Amino acid sequence: MEFLIPSRTARPADDPIFALNAEAQARKKSGEPVINATVGALLDDDGKLAVIGAVVEALRSVPPEVGAAYAPIAGPPAFLQGVIDDLLAGRPEASFATAVATPGGSGALRHAITTFLEPQQMLLTTGFYWSPYKTLADEADRTLATFRMFDEKGRLDIADFERKLAGVLDAQGRALVFLNTPCHNPTGYSLDETDWNGVVDVVGRAAGRGPITVLIDVAYGRYAKEKLGETFAPALRLADKAMVLFAWSASKSFTQYGLRVGALVALCPDAGERTRVQNALAYASRGTWSNCNAAGMNAIARVLADPDLRARVDQERAAWKDLLDRRVERWNALATAAGLGYPRYDGGFFTTVFCEDAPRAAARLREEGIFVVPVQGALRVGLCSVPERDIERLVDGLRRATNP
Ligand code: PLP
View 1 (spheres, helix red, strand yellow):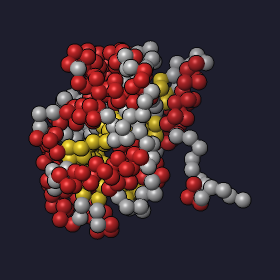
View 2: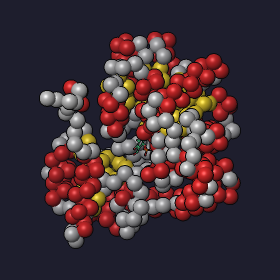
View 3: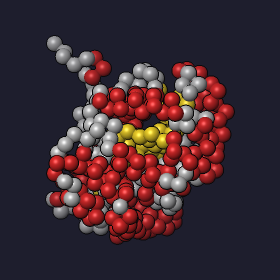
View 4: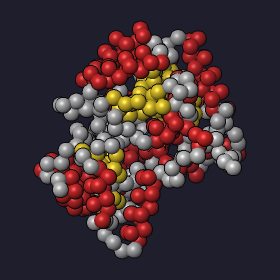
């Protein structure tokens, strides 16, 4: 007798990235000189998790009775205001933003999918995407469609975006678009002003055909060349044409992956709509995880609001970002010289090397102790977990594996 409902009987056993990472770690432990570029967290050159000490201090100083209590379902107001200011301080959009707390950015993505798409409808994103986008859609009985991410010049393929968006609107009368930028996972690409202008034009032209929601996933926003608020500034012109959402996460920004602190922020110029969106999101929270991590939100709210604490956090993060930027610089020098094909990469945790038979190339690299993640048509390389000294061997391995 099968107890599982039919749609749940063939779920894969493990997240493939976690499985690869586990093998890499086991082989390293047994003494092999392994390069593990599968990890989605920033590690120092000794393989230890990069942690911002001032955030840990803030966590330790949360009063026990605050950490132990239930947080408000929508999230503590000080935390939500801190997140809105973090994204939009000094901009008029801050006055019509609303937010709800979520367990990490993942929770924000989940709420967006179930609140802005009907069951069975499709979410639209770039052809390269973080694979949990599909898992989140699947789990919520929605599907995922993609547009080609890069055109011949290596820029965001605006023409294909326009085609696919029109197709989605024709098929289901509404659209939800996920754009992960800056420092897109897995490609490392950041939309620039030209890309954003293209997106704004396309959405503006399509807006009359049905409601369009554009979610900007800023999970890696603190590792870009520009300041967080500058990375999406041109997209704010979308606010009167579309519903603009931000998936905000403390995981990478505050190096607190396990804390599960995040938020979904929505820009709603109309007050009535803002209330309806706020209610729908808070209701969704009550109907899923109830409330989020009280101690985590309290600590992050303090970090966001206290100028001295925030300055210390920013300073520590800047040092970690420098470490990553040095790896990116070394990568760009060596990978360009080796003729590897990869998108514009100015910073962030990952890049991808284009490659026809990615599973085969990844398997070959794995044999020589280099672990990367095969994705559709490319290999994801997490420089966030590769010491600068190993980049030469990594590039050399990739060159051989992708040009057999
Ligand atoms: N979005 C992208 C593209 C990510 O890579 C991640 C984490 O790896 C997230 C969102 C959300 O992470 P979390 O739920 O830990 O905040």
